[in-house]
Length: 102
Image 1: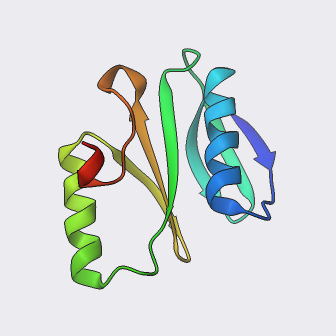
Image 2: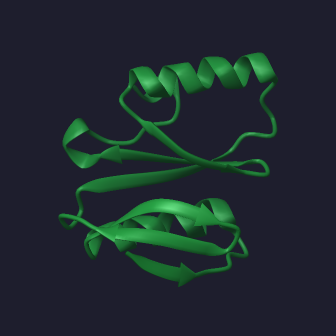
């Protein structure tokens, strides 16, 4: 397991890009503790990541959204304030966070 310290000015796009770069190097995100990110070695590019800003969703809309993502085989990693982190195996296809793109 490796531990990385990382801060982002633009957390949605910056964190998404960085997590996917880590996956390309053969690391899978397993935990987040504030600004520390914990990774486990895995097959290179096995996982794809997305970060989403969800403060604009009501509780009911968020639960529907979460259920849609689970049905799409997308794993919820962590919630941090208004950001949600998602993971999916690349073999399962692109990681699309909206129904319109499915």
